[in-house]
Image 1: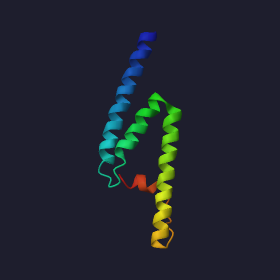
Image 2: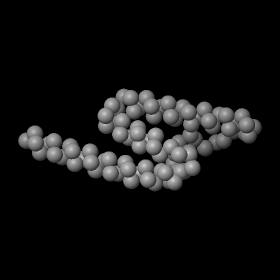
Image 3: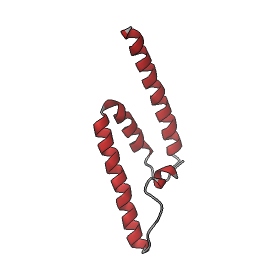
Image 4: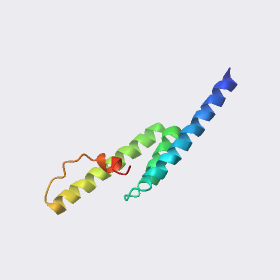
Amino acid sequence: DKGEIAAYAILGFIGLTFITVFMSGLIKSCKKGIAPQFLLYFILAFVCPPLSVKLLKDEIEDLKEQRRILEKQNGRKDESPWYKEIITCF
């Protein structure tokens, strides 16, 4: 019935929120300090998926732009893809 479905939905949301907080704790060890932003995007994914996707795309573009600036400063091209900056946080 509907009450059971609602209970499962609430439990699922609480579980995902717990996992998100746990993951953000892992990300906080990252030097970039991007954990709060990704936690925000994770929460926004539940509240308003289109907005969270747009914000995440903007964040990825910022990472790419930072990489371009660093490449110009260093005078060489960094071959690792932009997402490695996020993955190396773990």
